[in-house]
Length: 186
Image 1 (spheres, one colour):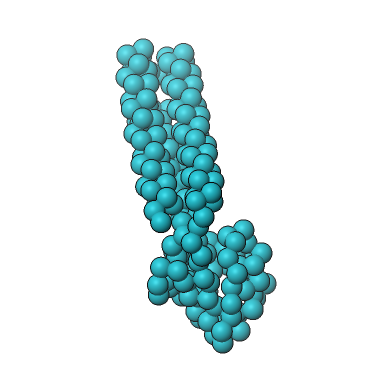
Image 2: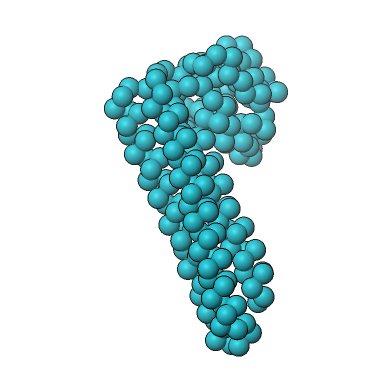
């Protein structure tokens, strides 16, 4: 396998690890209304589990309220059930063809718990990134051992992989720092 292919694959996998972290962070409640809190919830819609964002318009008319307007008003009951079954900790109220979610302010203790959880998610993402680095380095070693690349190419490739690792770990840290600031802001 050429070094360029290994590098490209490694970069794509690391990027996906950071994107997965970002998706996880979006679903964490910060005390402010955000469509990201509910858009991933799967709703039973005519027998199939469909993401809420695909069957409803999600809006935040004010910082403490999420308004969900389904495209099909008959799905309001299923949306309410799905939100109640989810772990977001918000109680939905159905009003005609609209579902409202009030987002209460977070206590200081809950903010600290969420910050700890966010740090844990970041560490998991960094572990995933490091595992990707390890896999790439093993591939480089096997290519060198099979004499498909030179020792110099292997050394350079490992340096480049280390740089990628630092780059994506830094991105993960930046996402987490932003989320913690968001959580701790009253």
